[in-house]
Image (cartoon, rainbow, N blue to C red; front, top):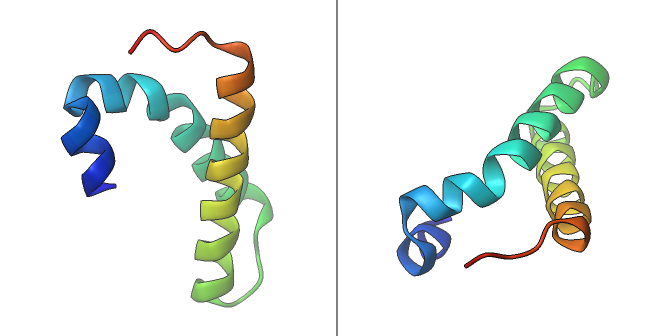
Length: 63
């Protein structure tokens, strides 16, 4: 995360990752009830990664 902000700057990093982050957060909060913080955190991070990847396929990188 630090590298992302350092390389892109705060504004560009937030513009690029805000939507996938928010969507992954909502999905994890609604559906991931595994009774283990570690598993839910890993699930959230994987979901964020996948949503970010999917977004990169459809949204032109203006950076």
